[in-house]
Image (cartoon, rainbow, N blue to C red; front, side):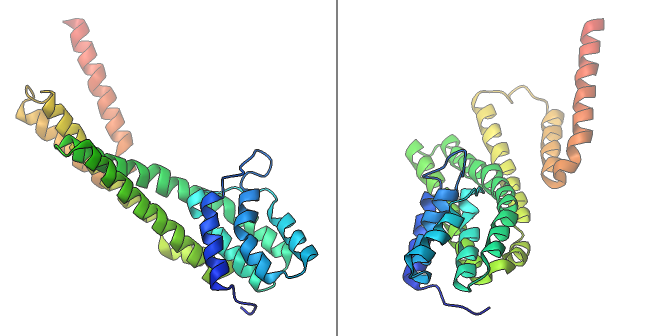
Length: 250
């Protein structure tokens, strides 16, 4: 691709402004105003004529919504397209095409995987005796290292790849990373649950057979994931029905 490079100062300004992309969120344009605000330093360098700048801003104030942590991918890619002098219609179509996939990826990676897993790791520390403030600090540190790293990586990838960013996202395999993080979260949940049960004496009366069965079920769920939920659900329902029937007959 050819075109005017995006100056370093404008890149950093746009990246830092992306942290406020939800600051003007509304039901009409959603993140549109925040997206235009974040892109403004780049547009100012590329559009010296005031009328051209206003037209470009008006295009980017329009409706846009995606996951805030991955919005930098779209922001960087659009900055690259604007620097390359791409057709405004192409830029608009690109934003429409990318916002949905980024939203789904971000929800799965951050809200369903990274956030609960880092919270659980902090709670595990607290459960095994760490002071509460240590658990909070560890949670905040872990969460924000991932959060900030994801934002920085996304903006850089978008800026370098432009419209080819979809291929880079496929290579990054964020979905697989989310699955791995969820598995770590499952382990942390198991550790936390076990520690709390032991602390409350909840495992004191369990025979060894049932303890081993519970451990085997945990390992099966960890390895098989969602593939195991249907047979596991049927087994649990059957066991509950059997116990209920025995209790009713007795």
